[in-house]
Image (cartoon, rainbow, N blue to C red; front, side, top):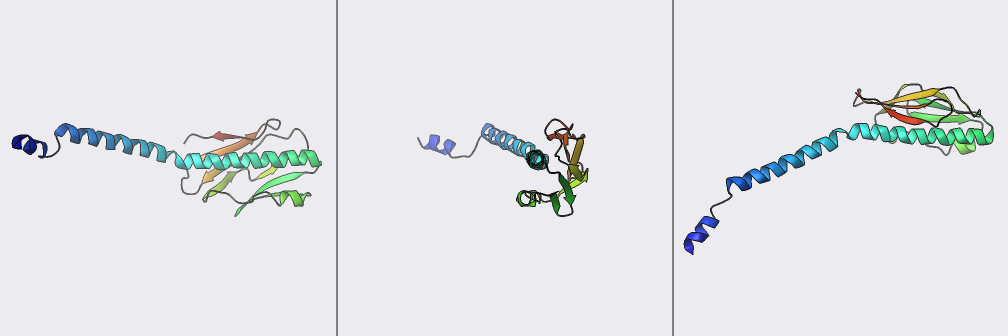
Length: 149
């Protein structure tokens, strides 16, 4: 009995150490894969948010018969038009710090039912290779088109 206890208390076997090491390696690999797409996903989420805001303003322009314009500013963006009481309720800042407009900082959102094709491209100051374009052909709603780096 003393001999069995001595064998059991000598430490871990090589197989046990290898299994634990493999589990740690797999967990680390999954964490890195999930983390590396985070910046692109956050930028795409910001693009989705902007697409929804643009569509809301576009629908408001159609319903009110008043022109609405979206314009990028150094601090974020602004909606301009005659119906300021409604437009002033819309957000004017990016939710994600570091978001910038790279192209297309001025969009006309109505009141015509068919608009010219328009787009705006967002980027990230911290990750210059990341880009997201929000576009419409003039008839379809604004949609996010993710660019591959």
